Length: 62
Image 1 (cartoon, rainbow, N blue to C red):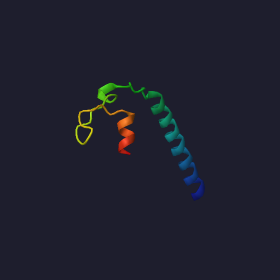
Image 2 (tube, rainbow, N blue to C red; image 1 turned 60 degrees about the horizontal axis):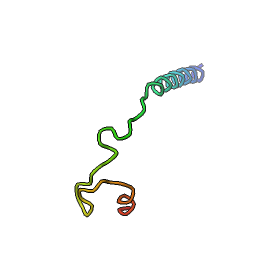
Image 3 (cartoon, rainbow, N blue to C red; image 1 turned 90 degrees about the vertical axis):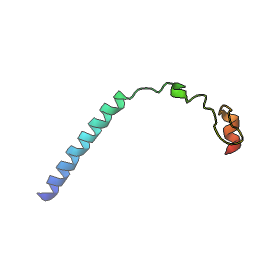
Image 4 (tube, one colour; image 1 turned 30 degrees about the vertical axis):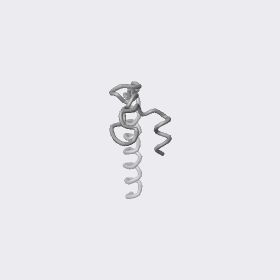
């Protein structure tokens, strides 16, 4: 009796979680490239100060 009660509760909770994640996945919006200044970020400190952070500069620092 006790085991079945826990298993049933677990199954019900899992179904609710799956349903919730499906609903949240459908509500996600695509991110706009370059929104809020993310595309052409200007470095503020260091040797590359006032340069736009592109792949050349980022590879050098890594």
